[in-house]
Image: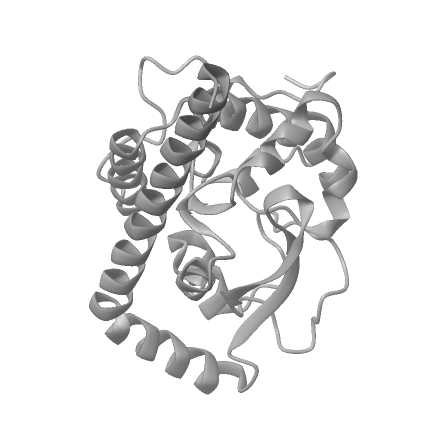
Length: 237
């Protein structure tokens, strides 16, 4: 066997080991979280049921790794009659939100059922946010490389833009603003991080994300070069 073949074989082995280590990381975190947060799951399910009955969960097709669609799960935060019609984004003061749903959205608790997606292998704990099929056309040019990575519960863009609903200008169409400003900003953050990620950096990002959601750490550190505060719709201050 020639030297190049040996190098190629070793490269595949190293990549396989890295994939296996990442998968073990995902499984350990997801199983531990499901056990620890099981009382939260039960309380949220009861609250949604009492407020508006079924369905408890919201399921929607999202873009996964390599652009393959998968069904992503959330706790339902809109009224039961809302369905999947209307704007694919949640904005501040969204009239579709129920009182319980508004709390779930503000605390990100509505995202917890995606731990099931992690167990299934559709998602990772740390990865780019899986986009709605409504924005599949945004993955073009260099941004299509975001789909090289398995989508996740947490990532740089999820942390920086965790209060995304507050950044939509009142006089701009939300989907246009998302396409022209927020999506490119998120994609650039993801592409700056994920090609150079390590298990150590993923674990640090996970801790930072949890602390940010709890309000114990800033969503943006002083050393970050981009974040929500830098996002402006052209023509708006």
